[in-house]
Image (cartoon, rainbow, N blue to C red; front, side):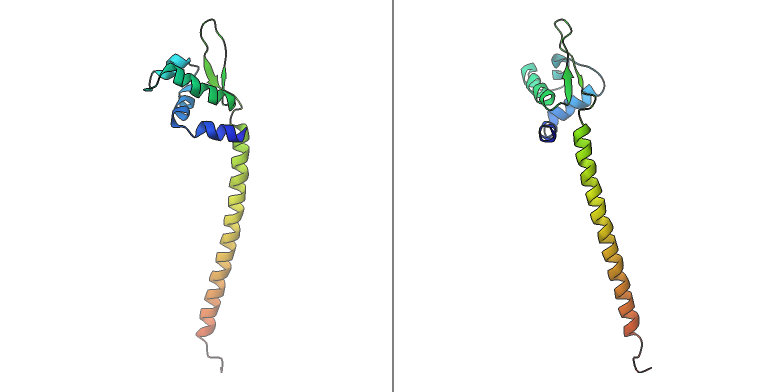
Length: 118
């Protein structure tokens, strides 16, 4: 599911469609208006978003409004949180190494300034 969500989010038109759907439901025709693409092309984008679990479509007579899926980004958010946690752990270790190197450097500088014969 993460792969299909990342694939869906890789396209700027699909990201713009999601941003528009964040404002509320819309049909393919309504979503096509701000773009220089056809309604069938928008429908293709909607199919990718739906397959990725990012949007839901319902039937309302002749209309087929789309809306954001309530938990569409959950798996992606969990994955990103894991990456963020791993990166923070790496940076914490790096900070400790740099602090240790700084302390050792300062100690060596102090040691070099003293006369061992004294």
